[in-house]
Image 1 (tube, chains in turn green, purple):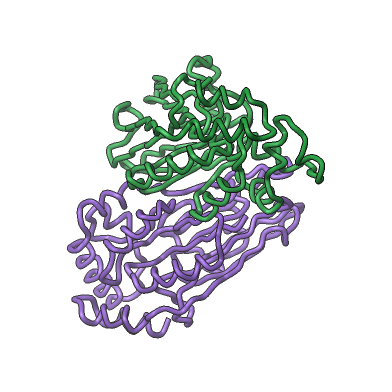
Image 2 (cartoon, rainbow over the protein chains, first blue to last red):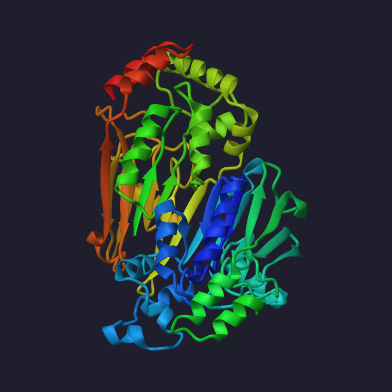
Length: 245
Length: 252
């Protein structure tokens, strides 16, 4: 089965719409969102509403939790600064963000009932805002994955996609950072998401039995950047979209 | 958030279509399927396609597990020789009509999906399975001994356990010294067995104060919906499947 994983949309509606069109054309069997729907741009409600209408299984990201405790009075909406992105979120959507799960775990029993756990988290399984990077210490990472009983760990948060394979005595562990739909930071401004394909031969001893594809989606970056410049948000956010850092 | 949970469609396309129409009116934030997409009616491929098309996360049921592996055993606990004989016809027929691509999908479904909440710095695990966390074809009926049910949930680290398989919906709240467990059977979309022939599913409400300490902080709604039962029953009668399965649909 083909599982689509995406995250870090960050209120970027043009990027999200381009992603949805690309996603639909690839006909995945299941779709999960790893959080950070809001922050950094002006369309948090539109993004949340599209995810809710589709009933997409979604995790809470660190930005999603910021809106939960934020008090928004009339005058806050006229204040420039990065918090403007969170003040824009409607109460009904804050309620939704405040009740999202921290992790989703898929427990497979494929070959001869071999247990294989695919764990989805926003930052790490230890913390919503911990970065799991391509060069995070291997021993530390293995300790975390063993603690979380994760054979395949998929995360977002850093906006820098990679697929790391760690060899262990009991086969391979996979760590996949799925990149960012609406705010890439790897020098490529196109949106990014992952298609993970599991077959009935998928097992931990054959590292190639799990297929990981990174999909890049071009979108109207100019439109998303201009929206920031015309808003009360810092202009620096627009530059970051244009140059993907 | 509002989570829709459905299962046990058993190749009943008219019931599945009516379910989709009904569930849309409730605007759920997420939708999960707890397995048994196939068996007992003529539309296994169509049911699989409709669920895949929507990208709905789905766990494997015992019937899916059997058909996925082209087995002649669906893991069903038939009580009499007559039931066994009827069951054999259904699994042979389903194996004959399910296409390779749909069979491959059934083979790679996960056994469980676990939603790990951390609301109010409290842990709350919602575990979705087909039969029980221990076994895909274990029946957890409403009259299950409380100690046994608690042990199963504790072993699986499940605070809220949602399952199907028996086609008889219920919500049981189990209290221990300082906390509550919820066992929820979500009923069946396409083959109810609780004397009500309408399709059934569940809406689970998780709020920001949902906690294992307050039993009312997790709400469970059982929804029933009408569908074209006659169309589904007639399809059984016009197929090589035993006519008994048509009667079961008409009488729930």
